[in-house]
Image (cartoon, rainbow, N blue to C red; front, side, top):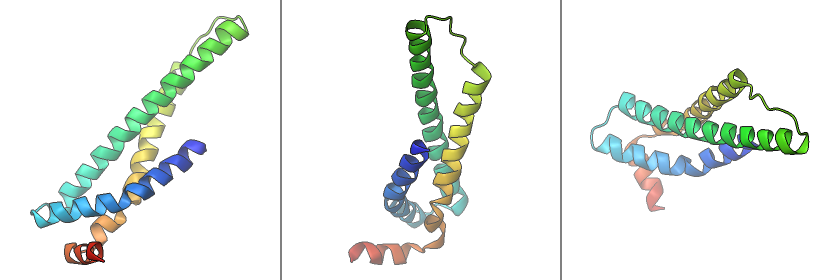
Length: 117
């Protein structure tokens, strides 16, 4: 739950930057599909990296606890870890892309005028 809150905060903070980047790309002739593909790729890569780090650190902490505190053998739940990793990537891409709707709604001139204020 705390990871989702941090993710939402990060996406909200970077939203203005994404809008500015899309304005630049639109001005240079990029189409909506190209911008959409860029955003999906970026958020998916971010989700895959975040999920891999989270799953890796969680598995390492679990191994340390089970092995040394409980003194038991540790068998990592590979399918569950894989599902969490893919789920994190999908959730990040979905939340990030849905939070970037302004990128497609605002015309470039409107954003440029807002940046001047």
